Image (cartoon, rainbow, N blue to C red):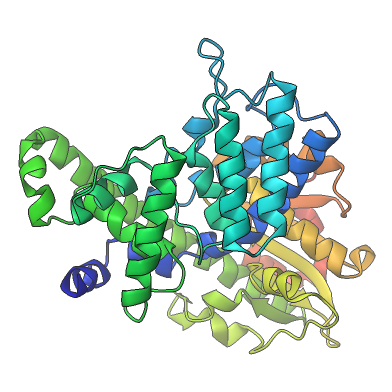
Length: 412
């Protein structure tokens, strides 16, 4: 097992590097998902949840999960409303919907593994059609050190590695698998992490034939060569696209930091991005070394520290906040800016989404959602990559303060 973990960790294209270790999107998702679940629970309790997955608050939560690169691709499928099969039966059956809401609330409000297991067993006894261990992906983002994520590739990897025959759709099988993974993770936690996502990523790599071991070698050889090459090419393409996106993300942070400095503001770059580079310079060179956020709960302070760029006045009060969106959820960025606006003096701040031109229609649609417009925050404007890239030098030269962005920013 030790050598297998080393193989996994030494592969720069493994999900250990592309998702678990170096993905800011993964870290940002935790608070986004928790906050989104509060809205799901509230709507279920108030009987305003609706009768379809599309457009629901649950869709926003599961989208934030499914955007977590390779590991959670397809996570939303289990929650799509399939009218011919009447599953999952939480959209038209009010009693099932309320039971699902109680389950989510109980899991959200506890830090006890035993309590979550008790709630899983209670939910399982109800035998709600279509509500199975796919929900474990939500639980993982609530309790990452206690419950692993769950999908076909992870289960396949588990069965191959441990010579088991776990069933994909069984809560009982999931809990058995969890117990084994807790034991294994405790043995190898010095190599991996307390967060079970690291070990689940290893199982994903085995189950999707990215890591070949004796137990999956024969199955791998049975896969048609064309499919193998297609999967390999797709993976290489995904990795390259991720690199391009990360470079563009750093570029936009660089422009915003340079502009903020030229306007006389202090600048904060998201704490995990200080070592990133653009144009031969580390972004951290433009940033305050520490962000002094007082009188906020640690979870809120952590969220604000992950916002891509902040401009602050000489007293280090936030003047403007920027979230750079690439392929990640626009909704997630809106929630983070909403958190910021609630936490600081919103009437003195301005908030911006920064996104590529191809996502402008999506931004408009998201900002027009009733659930977004009802957020207790200032209105959010947006800037397009092209405009910021082309006009940054001119704004640095002629701008006096944050109002220079009024010429470029757009509102809905």
